[in-house]
Length: 84
Image (tube, rainbow, N blue to C red):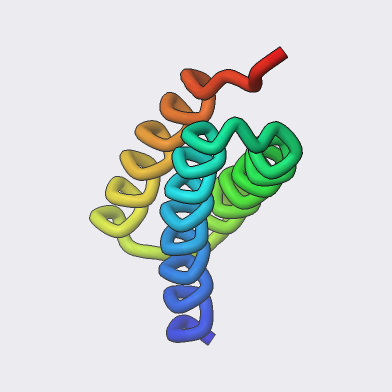
């Protein structure tokens, strides 16, 4: 179970990075619908990762790394703007 949990965390982190790359590309292309959908997915994945990290039996170093990742990407999420 611990391996599955660790893999889920890694998969979520990779997905978050992929979504952020998509958002940058959509911003470059002025694709508003793609930006909105990606922002929604990004927010959902960040929340899910936060829930897993807060409830998971993981070691202190892994927890700190995940919290730093979340802090960085929540800040990035907040800085992204949706075109009007």
